[in-house]
Length: 60
Image (spheres, rainbow, N blue to C red):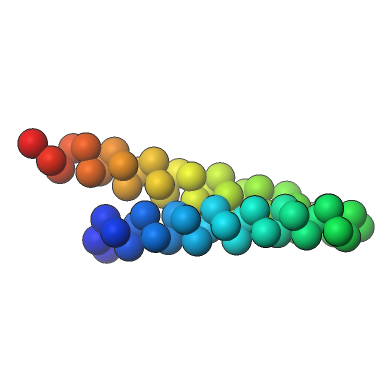
């Protein structure tokens, strides 16, 4: 997987997780959806961090 794909996937995960967390504000009875959204957001941040670290190690 290329670096650009990793960064793109991370932004998609962050936006998707944030949208799910926002939906919890509209429908508070779906608390598991909000927890799942936060988990997806954290996963997206980890992918973004890994992509940045990989970029730093790869460039001289």
